[in-house]
Each structure stands twice: as structure tokens, then as C-alpha cells.
Image 1 (cartoon, rainbow, N blue to C red):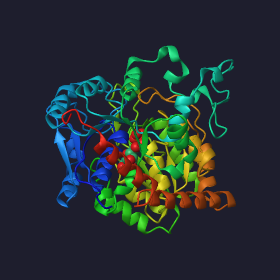
Image 2 (cartoon, rainbow, N blue to C red):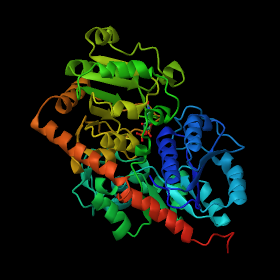
Image 3 (cartoon, rainbow, N blue to C red):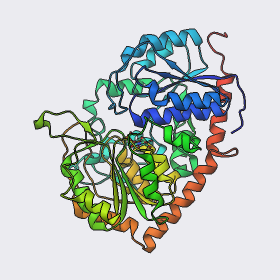
Image 4 (cartoon, protein in one colour):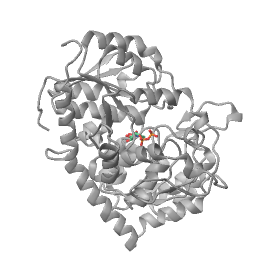
Length: 481
Ligand code: UDP
């Protein structure tokens, strides 16, 4: 990308959970590659995750830097849930803003306390909420009239006023949408962060969800810049390997295994940075994968241990949750690779051997799957993931639902298991040859092409990055008045 102007200074203040931190770092790289002087506000615990990557970009000439704040919110694991209190960072962020007075600060919605402080300093604040236009429209357009008279949480209702006919159930919604009288203080804080803001930065691209982008920007008049997929700024193998926290799996083993597979023959299974699946669910997945007779790479993240065992949620686990002899059989037959820990997701998704992606529909994983041209098996769990599933399977028609119907408060006990039969059916539907599966693949490859074009010069996301930089430069900053 060609820098336009070197004179705009933007701060990026990411949250500590992986699904929010990673795209914000990518966004900082995107803006730096357009010439904006980009500074990432990090904590002593979070900086090591992206220090190497940012130092390398800085050395190669990008105007990008990390500023490590003098306070910490210890979270070395990038698995912070949405309600971790980060307000210990208020004073150092305030002081640094005062000292440097950037043209604007892009702030994650989970820093709920930041709104007033930034407003009082008179520095334009741009909200980053980590979701796409479709999910945002579902959320903003949700009407309690639509759910009046429903006989159960599993009865479908029509989400009103959307460009497509979208039905959801109450069981797929977060509690604050189901019951408006129970909107917690922290959700109100997030709303306040958007009020009086300069606008919203959206990690998506216009051609993915044009009707919803138009609804947000034109019909509802929201000020938004749609600048993604930001993950596409990671162009080299090094970029992709160093993204997120340092991976704990054996990358070479994984790539060697994938290299030994035929093109378009392997299912990639991952549930993101936050989800903790209980052993019983992992067992059902294992049985379902084995019965499907398809090759797979399964990245097992954190495991939800039985609360009665009084143990911590641990990464990796002992493996005793797998069916007897499972890993041995997978090794013998070469059918499957089970990896524990943190994986270089972009490298895996973009490998020629990957044919499908079983995902929890986190927005980043969704965009990364789309950008890699890989159709999905959707298994939403929490947050806005059920909306993302609707976009994938019903609007874009590039995925198959596994059939989970229950929204899950990510750190609570697991409600309903998805049985092995459902897993097998979904895997076969996506991975076996059929006209329907072929059509999904054709569609997602077409969308992947549009994603790549969006971030290139002349593309819609490229233009939105430029537009925001120009708008910021046109502002009269408080220190210039
Ligand atoms: N990710 C990764 N390796 C892993 C797990 C996740 O690189 O082993 C990255 C993934 O590529 C994505 C992010 O972590 O960029 C997860 O974000 P998403 O919105 O999909 O889900 P969340 O983790 O927020 O539930």
C-alpha cells in the first residue's frame, strides 16, 4: 500500500482478549501502511504478544510503535472475557493522551470507562466493537415487540426491518437483549462509549454485507469506516506466524502434515481464543470427526474443567477426554491431527489442503475463513456469534449449521451438548462432494476475491481508510485551536 500522508497521528487502544486485540493490532498496521503514525497502547503483559511483529514493521519503515502503559491489568493469555475491568489503565492513558494529543484514539468498546475521560480531553474517539455490519444491524434493530407473545425461548421470531428475512430465537440472544430491564451497568458503559464518538471503525468489507453496510451508514446515518478484512495486512509467512500470541503448537509439524495431504481435503476445527469446551463436548466432536471419515486438523484450545473438581480452566489438558485410542488411530491412519494450544490460524486456513472450517463464528474467524475462501461449519456459542451464523449460512450461503441453539455465557457451565451424530452430518455435508457443497465453495471463493480487492488501492476498504485519515486531518484539534 502507498502512504498518502505522514502527518496524522492515531492511537490504538486494544482490549486484552484475543478476538479484540488481534484485529486492533492489524488495524494499526493497516493505518500505518497508509502513512498514519500509529501508536498501540499496550500493557506490560500484552506488549510481548505483538512486540516482535511491530518492531519488524517499524524497522521496515512503517510509522508504527508500541507505547507501554505504566499500569498493568495482568492478562498474559489473551483470553480475557468481555467484562475484565481495565480501569486501572485510566490514568496512564489520560496522561499519554494529554502529552501527545493525537488526532484521534481508536478505543475498544470493552474499555467502558474511557468515554468521559477522552471526551473531556477533547480528543476525537473512534469506537471499535469488533463486530460486522450484519450483527450490528440485528443488535440495533432488535425489537421487543417482535418477541412479545412467544411461547418459548426456542420459538423463532422475525428480526424486523432487515433487508433479508432473518429468524432467530430468544435462546440465541445475549441476556441483555432478551431482558432490557436487566441491562447491566457495563453494557450501558459500552453504549456511552459510542455516544459523542467521532464514529465507528468496522472490520468488514462492503461487498461482504452491502445491504447492511448501507443500512448502517446511509439509512441510519451512522458514521462508520469499513476497513477490513484487516487480517489481510499479514502478507508474509512471518506476519502470519507472529500474529496473536506466540503459538504453542509445533508449526512445522502442522505444515508438514498439511503438505502431505491432497489439495482441498482437510477440515480445520477451532473455536477461537475464548471458548472453553467441556471434556464431554470434546469427546462428541472426536467421535463425530472420526465417524465422518474426513481428514482434519483440530486445534483444541482451553478446556472447561468440571467445577466440582475445583480446578482452573487449563489450556491443553491431559487428553483423557479423547475417546480411548483416538489419537493413536488418527496417527496410524493419518486421518487427523490434534493440536493443543495456540495455532497460527491464518497459515492453516490459507493452506491449499484446507477444504472447510468448523468455527464458533467469532467475527475474526468468520472473516479469516471468508478471506481464505473456505466454507464453514457454524457452531456459534456466545456474543454475537449466532448472528454471524445467520450471515454465513442464510445470507451468504457459504456454510452448514451444526445445530447449536443455546447462547452460552462463556464462563458458565455448559448447557446443551451437540451430539456426535450432528457433528458427523455437518462434516459430511460440507466435506463430501455434492452440488450444494460445490456451490458453497464457488460462492466463498468469489467473496474471497472481493475481500482481497477491497483492501487494495481502488478498493472500498482502502478508500475508507483514506477517507478517515483525511477527515481527521481536516479536524481542528484542541491543541491547534
Ligand atoms: N486465533 C489464533 N490461533 C488460535 C486461536 C485463535 O490465531 O489458536 C486467532 C484467530 O485467527 C482470530 C482470533 O484469534 O483472529 C479469534 O477471534 P474470533 O473473533 O474468531 O473469536 P474469539 O476468540 O474472540 O472468540
